[in-house]
Every structure is written in C-alpha cells, then in structure tokens.
Length: 404
Image (cartoon, rainbow, N blue to C red; front, side, top):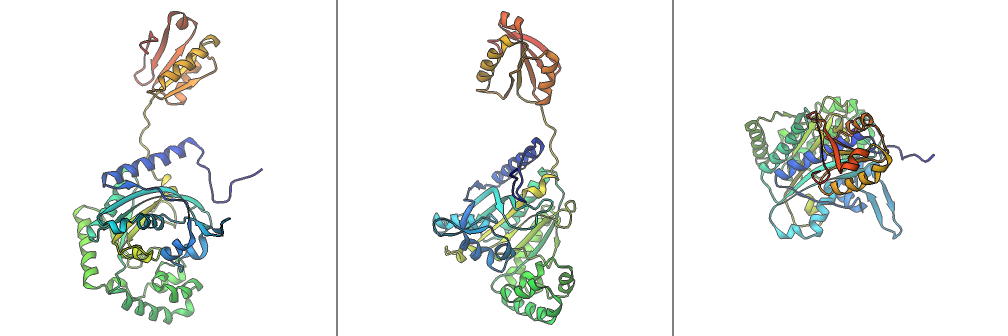
C-alpha cells in the first residue's frame, strides 16, 4: 500500500477541516480590516531566492530545503517560507519603483525537511502579512496588533516577546563584541554555533542547545548597543503597545531564525504546545528588497504556523444551516433530486438518495447539522406538497412545493 510521505499529512476529518477553514476566514477578515490585500505566489521558486534572502547560514537553507534540478536544468526548491516569494513578486512587478505603500497577506503550504513532531510537519501551512513602503515603527506596531487581534478572535492565549536587532549603524560594533565572547567560550559550544561564528554570529543566540543557551546568558546584549535611532524606535514601539494594552516582555536573545531581519523582532509564544512554543513571529527587514536587486524599500511582516494553532482554537458554537431533503419511498427520489438542484441555486442542500422512514431522515438531518428537514412521500407527491421541520425552532408544517 502506498502511503503519504513522512511529515506530509492529509486534512481529512471534518473537525480538522472546520478548524483550518475557520482560522483562514478569521485571519483573512482581520488582515482586510487592516487594509491588506491577498497575494498568491508559486510553491516552486529558484533556490537562489532563498539562499540570498533567508541566508546560507540558516538551518532552512543549510539543512531543510526540498531542493532539486528540474527537467530544464534549473536549480529549484519548494518554498520553505513565504516572505521571500512575496518580495520577489514585489520586485518582479516593479512595485519597488512605483513607490507608495503596498500591504499583502497570504496563506498556503510551505516545505521543510526536518524531524516531524506535533505541530511541526514537512509540509505545513502558514498565514502571513508583508508591508512595503513604511519606515515608521508605527507599522511594526500595526503588525503586532494584527497578530494580537487574530489570536484574540481565535480564543488563543499568548505571551509577546520583543527585541531590537539594531541596524547597519549599531550592528557592526555589537557583532565584534559578540564574536569576541563566542571565541572565549568556543571550546564549549556546539558545532553549529562554531560555524555560525563566521557566517552570521548573531544567530548563535537562537541556538536550541541547552549548554549553549546557558553560556549565552552572559553574552553581551544587542539592546545595550543600539544607536540613538534604533533605541528611539524601540522605546516608541513599547509605548504604543502600552497605550493599546498589549502586554509584552523584552527577550534580549530573540533574534528570529532568518537572516534578513533588522530593528524590530517579535515572537508570540504559547505555553500549551510543548517546548517549541512559538506560534507567530516577524519583524522588520528594511534591506531585503535591496538584497534581491530591488530598489531600497522599508518592509515589515510576520508569519503564523497554522498547524501549531489548530488545537488551540476555541471554535464558536456551530449553528444549524441549510436544508436536508429526503424521500419516503422510491417514487419520490427523482423528484427530491430535481427539487434539491433547484434549491441549491440559493441555499445549501444535503440530499439523501435512499428512501427512509421519517425517524431516519430526522437523524440524517441532525447528523449534517441542517436547519430544516424536508421530506416527501407518496401523500406529498399526490398533493404537490412537502413536509418541513425546523430543527432549531422545533416547529413543523406542510406547505405547497411552489411556496418551498
């Protein structure tokens, strides 16, 4: 028997589908309320896009990409994250040269070859938002408030962690100080951190190795080396969150897992999904458009892992909706099917093709959560009527087919 690939699951049962659909509908509604528009980018992209954006020092590029050569000899990969593709589309469509503000949201499948675990699959789904053309820290706050609103609508509790990664004015001196510290403990850190020391030193702070984390507790803090502009932006961001009653904590080791971030970095975490507690994260990436050969454009965004959130969603109580049509005997089956086809032009209709007694039709209507159970038997056929029970109001009546 052929089975699905490890870490690539089906969305099969009705409850999981309802949760997934409810998440997309809720997040989409909030994003549109904030003035964002939908964008769809291809699942398959050139590998170079992610090497240049995510960074060759990242685990995604170094270990996790589904990368191959296609029949045309092109080096391609399945997208491991959403931001790079949106930036590529932004540049390719010359929006970087058009000026103005451009805000997009997306959702879809991403692919990373990593060890599957609860809420972390090899094919997984993300919802994300990207904003181009606004340099103000108010747009960073806008993004954070949007994530907060989505999680609140879904009934998901969270803790918000903040940090500032500085910019090209304050990062170089911090990088030098961090490298000096890493060298002082190099004999005690993992091989990945030794490699990162020369490729992207700040990413050692994101290491999940407990031994490394205990050592980095004494590392110099980037937040202590911020230039005046970055410090002012970070203070303003915290004030905006205070004004809007969004609680947060400063995490000086929060660096995000991708190489393209600068200034604001944020992460929403949950205490209900185990050790891998991040459920959403993002930040500012003012230089990424330029890195990918576009015109320098300020940008900020976030992404949410959908599978990680599904079990945490508080679903609203489902209301009965639509019609259930059933026949009491064989003579009424064709009439019921024709009637269902007509009714489906404006309403949701479930049609039962097998003749059943009234008790079983009521059970069927209840099973599909229909609002109305509508049944036709020989008497109804003869009189051109239909029997209807409102399963919510607990009332019943027999009416003319034309009125139905």
